[in-house]
Length: 412
Image 1 (cartoon, rainbow, N blue to C red):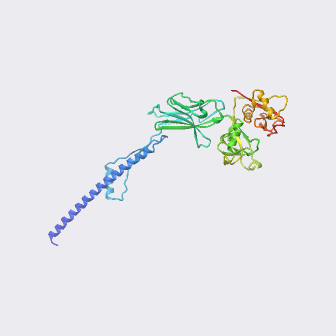
Image 2: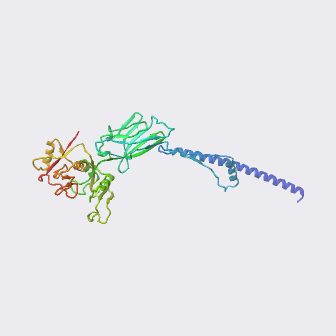
């Protein structure tokens, strides 16, 4: 090859190299543009997801900031030259704590039937916030199985509403704009349980749960039909008929700690069936087993049949043994109480008088369910010598057996 041909070939190679270089730069610019767009698209999508997930319950969306600097562009340039080089990004996340929260001074409040109770709930706000007129305060009652919340009271500015059996019995304490405490008056047995205070102000909110306990007594119960004859709904009616409600597990456990020992299994308010044993023995699961509240677990509320554990509390009225010149049949006992301006007493009222007021009487007498019982708070010979208890004499023949009568006169 002559010298002219070699020069012509060298110029061609140089021209080819410059074109290839320009082509690669165009590719890098396009790749840089595309990757920058991808980064910005990802940032916007992340921000949209963050905003969509923003909930009114203590969640504050993280602020994502992404800086595209000369170093980032250089990194993109290197990636364009080497596609195998993974892109490195720095994401800055800022998390803020809750700007609104609520707290309770007492997580458990104890009162009695007929009394009052204040369930505390105090609002705490960030200094940058001020209470708005649209702040909503809502109280609900949790069911024993925690599957439902029943409305109790709602307040927003001047608008206030109470619900169901709480109507006219509840109001906010309102000692300050930050006080969301609930006052319940004229407490009933059904008021026992757990309550949730929820405060909502715009996108900020807070909740706290407070328990309301009642002084009272747990007692095992079965009707005239005999033991293990109640499904859950029958058990609810049986307790209600005896001025009581179905006991909760916490109430039964507290009674067991107070030495309640009962070998028959009974329904509890959560649909479980359990029984308390303080003295293990062969007839009750074996003498080598541990003491405690034993459980059959949650049972079918319609098909399964057991006894029931009832709970009752203080009453407004007078429980007493009717002084009468002669013993009475059941019907005569009912009439005698009515003639005295009272009604024949219920089993729950006898247990409340015995446990909460120390009522003591060694005379067996009729009660409303047709049973015969007597309360002994001071054990003595021929009258429950071993322990304080409500003694049970069974369900005698109403027409022919003669006993005394226990009456109850309510205070309206």
